[in-house]
Amino acid sequence: MRVIASSIRKGNVIDQDGKLYVVLSAENIHPGKGTPVSQIEMRRISDGVKISERYKTTDPVERATIEDHNFTYLYEDADGFHFMNGETYDQVQVPKDIVGNAAPYLQENMVVKLSLHEMVPVAITLPQRATLEVVETEPVTKGQTASSSYKPALLSNGVRTGVPPHVAVGTRIVVLTEDGSYVERAKD
Image: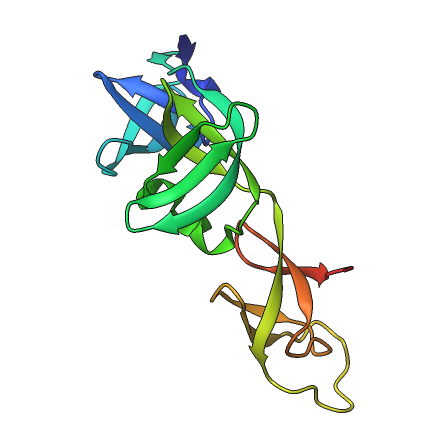
């Protein structure tokens, strides 16, 4: 499907020269003089090579047809991550480079959105939040106010984050899967 370059957004998949690229960032630049351009950073799906392209905002770009489906995370092995479609019970294997930074937040039976191009996974979208347990942090200091001073903590998935002073080891907290930042204490 042909679209103009200025309509391309992060997460879109572009078909360029017969190869598929996933868009990492897209920025429309309007200089005071000259033609407005779209600066697009993308990663080639076949081998993971990152490239940066600049198009005129009105240039036609071929957008690949992508189907989004909900899949349930099953397990990880040496080949990659395995997911199952809850409706058809089809299983799909996703390579480690596509999952990328999202890997530590994957939990058994977590429902994620996989973007497929001709039944080949090209991108993954996790739920916005994940509940994890604090396994290591400094002890609570008496008299320390609950101001914006955060202390370092290690979570059950191996990610380090900052937590408020009142959070102790064994506390379950909710974090954003995008950057691992603390949101709130878990309500369970």
